[in-house]
Structure formats: C-alpha cells, structure tokens
Amino acid sequence: MIADLESYPPLVFAGECDQLRARMAAVAKGEAFLLQGGDCAEAFDAVSADHIRSKLKTLLQMGAVLTYAASVPVVKVGRIAGQYSKPRSKNTETRDGVTLPTYRGDSVNGFEFNEAARVPDPERLKRMYHASASTLNLVRAFTTGGYADLRQVHAWNQDFVKSSPSGQRYEQLAREIDNALNFMHACGADPEEFKTVEFYASHEALLLDYESALTRVDSRTGQLYDVSGHMVWIGERTRQLDGAHIEFASKIRNPIGIKLGPTTTAEEALTYIDRLDPDREPGRLTFIVRMGADKIRDRLPELVEKVTASGATVAWVTDPMHGNTFEAASGHKTRRFDDVLDEVKGFFEVHKALGTHPGGIHVELTGDDVTECVGGGDEIFVDDLHQRYETACDPRLNRSQSLDLAFLVAEMYRDQ
Image 1: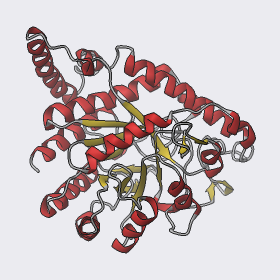
Image 2: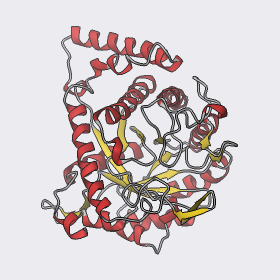
Image 3: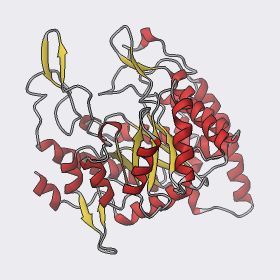
Image 4: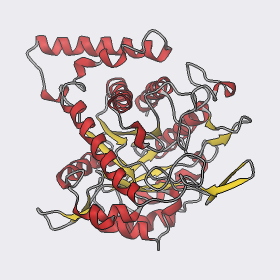
C-alpha cells in the first residue's frame, strides 16, 4: 500500500506550501489573522459537493466577518482533505460488556461498533488519498470558479438568515460589504482579489506511513515537502521531543503547527523552535495552544514571554475546543460555547497584556445544523444533544455558533 501511495501524484504543490508559509509569516509578524477550521474527523461518506460546500461556506462567512469587522487580512486554512486519522487516549472501547479496538478514524478502521469494522485495513490509506483528492478538487473549483466571489456574500447566507440571529447579523454586514463594493466599482476599481479566495488545506500528520509516502523532493529546490496538505500539525499526544513526529516535521519545508496543552513548559517550546525552526524563519512554525478556559490565563503568559524573548517569530493561535470537552449526563461528549469563548478571551487578554499578537483561531466546526456543543446565540441545551449528534469523534460548533464566534473574535481583535 505504501509503495502504491509513493507512486501517486502530489495532492498539493510545493509552491503552494511556500505561499502559505509567506502568509503565515504575516500572521507571525502581526499583519494578518489565521482562521483554521473544519471537521474533527472527516469521513469517507461525507465527500460530497453539499458537505464540502457547506463547510467552505461557513469558513468564507467567518472570513468575511473577520476581514470586514476586524479590518485585518485573514489567512483561510481548512482542517480538510486529510483529517481522517484520530489519536485516541484509550486503545479499546467497551459497550454493553463488549470490548473492541477504538475507532481511530476512517483512514484506519470503521466507526461501526462491530469486530469486522474495527480491524485496521491498509486499503483505507488509499481511500484516504482519493477522498482527499476529491475534496481538494471541489475546494479548488469552489474557491476559483466564482462561488467565493465577494459579491456572493448574500448568496452564502440565503438558507440561513430567516432562522438565526447570527444569520441576521451577518446579513447586515453583507449589506455593508455590498455597499463598499458598489462604491469601489463606481470609482472604477474591481480588484481580482475579490473574485477568488486563497484557501489552504491542513491536517494532523498522525499516520507517518501515509505522510512519508506522500513526501517528495521538490524539483525546484531539492528540498522535501509533504504534499498531502499545505500545512500539517503535530498533536498534543505525539509531540515528544525524541519522537518520530517531531523528527519527520523537522525534515519537511511545509509550514508546521504544534498543539501545546496545559503541561507544556517554556523550555519545551524553545526546544521545538530549535528543532523545527532553527533558522528562525517567520511563517515556519505555529504554536496552537489548547489549554482549557480555566488554565489559559495562568499557563500561556510564560510561554509567550520566553518565546518572544528568544527572538523567534512564531504564530500564536488558540484552539479553544480541545481543552474544554466534557461528558454530558446523556453520555454525549460535548463542549460549552461559553467555555470556548472564555478560552478565546483569555488568549486575547494574555497577548494584550504582553503587547504580542494574537495570531488566529483553530476550531472544529461544520456547516450543518448539528447539536453537538451546548450554548450559543441560537441556544442548544444538553437535552438537545441527541437531536443531531453526528460527529465521528469530537463535538463541533454548528454554523450559527461558528458565526457567533467570528463576530465575537472580530470585536476582541479590534479592542487589542
């Protein structure tokens, strides 16, 4: 299977990875903001035009809100076209007295709770490649074929505005954007930038067999790029300094992210910089902090202070999802929207106090009206979780909650 994958064409090109590294350099220097979002775990049966369009639509709407309301260029990166693998804290799962291997993502085994589905199957790596290729194909078509044109700001919202407070708030912003575009058009300006959108793909580089098989030598420079996605990150569970994931990331030229949880020490953070960004190149390294709302204000300041004092220019991004998960009485894994928001607020407060740049947000979201996280303007209660709980792993923000978050982040950014 790995030999087959090694013969397949790249999913992304080295030049696109370089372009994203340049965009991430602007984020690291305080000149732009990263919006990174998408599914917790992608599923092979969700590679349809409707699924991908609704996810993209949510990110485009959030991007429009952040760009317009915060007056900042927004770098848009999806957790998409490769997020098929999940690290798990337990190797087995028990239901009704039956114990089976854990579901580790569609790239490894099946979600159904039966023995046959839970057997790891190497064929799934090939399916992961083809599903990622199909997804990227659709994303490229949508982002360059007119769908992402800023004059579509209303069209992205048609199915949404009547039913949702955040949809109505967005519609008001869309009217303002329209007026600004009409004014510019009347003045004779019609920039190409308004007609398409730069959109990049990222995922956790968890299955090193797959990532290594898709690592190629760039014909222009002779350097290695992981062509499975533009940006890859190392998760909280696999960031051991002597581990294979850090070693792999040190060899490739892609922009790299590392998830930093509440136990991360400043010394570890500085060692990651030495290992992964020895040339201190802005845009190369992104620290995605996932502390939990109750810990972010205590744990983050020392990391930011010591990294800044070292002279390294990294992008600081908040992942307000992973540190705030709990189990509801119904047995559903969920997150409170207020906790997500509080962690983002804490992240902004720390950067404001230190005079550093809050570089972006990394969120698990979907374009569907799921009921997986409680709270938000269009409030979801714990008793509602069962109605549309569709995630394959962690709870995601729905479209309404995602837009609420974008408006609130824009306000925080303006107040910096």
